[in-house]
Image (cartoon, rainbow, N blue to C red; front, top):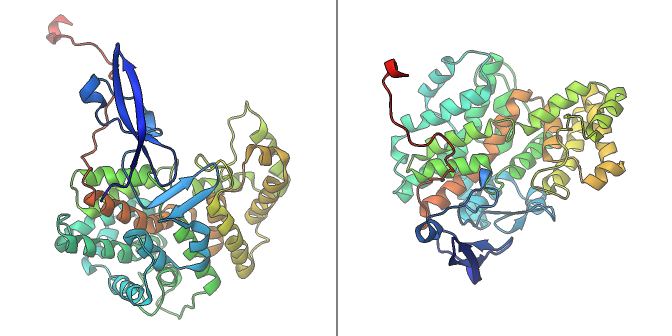
Length: 434
């Protein structure tokens, strides 16, 4: 990857009486960055940045976030335009390859992804090794990691053709693997992919159809899930994406890298946010209890927080929530379950958050996790599947980030430093003398 960073000056650091100077670069969007790669070599010191929240670990051309303005761009395109006007595979092509495809290119890409959607027949044996009550994410980590044991012809990361095959295989097989995880947890037979359907409709059918009767995919539901998938494709260097890159920096095969990303996504502070939002709605239970929880949320001394409101990155309205709010209400109208107590609680909370001065002042708007949780619940998915669906969507971003990393000439194996605060050097003493 050819760097397009522009040198716009220098930052000076005085350390132990010595002056050091480091170049400052300007990105296409976002803050300037200080290049400190020479810091340790020149000064013998390094920086302390827990969580790397002030550190750019890589150069990337894929996604840009402006949290203050509420902006999310995929390859320069605003997320709302892509979610409203495009579809999953077209946006997937954009994210992975950098440009929107023409019709012939998109047709070829769609055919490749569709024709690879079946999984190796022996892979079904992996599911039988899990307990029926295993969390679907546990199954996803194991099965995706095992793909490298079945597809030896696409694990050489130095071979461009093998990288292409591995990328397409993961994009096409992830919905099948996820649907199989759901079916296994339900005690139902697996449903094979249907190549006549689009990506998202095919996934819905694999989840909810049964062999004994025909199944028709509702286009309203498919459109809403397609938007959820698009909105969750990539989100800069978050925990799971950084995990994929870190694993990939060692030269690990792509299937292992994506499995590592899934494991990171499973954490409740990351991919489990929409599940947590729904659990909160269940805790509230009924509309008459909402004032109690609103008051608790406003109380600085109460540790309770409203899940699904506000965002650590977006200090303004989450741009993904704007798109999903409309789709959420369309789904609720289509399935006709607005009278369900939990959804009544959700809609009343939404109304309060958009009108209450406290929420407006604090910019605690409903975020994408709030609307995706409600929408997925209305679609019929249990909360244990929410993060799995997130993984299906995020696979696109993980693949794009992994491919970008492999081709980056500046990429090195990840090796963060630490500040050691343990015991000073000491000599071993035999156990009789302790």
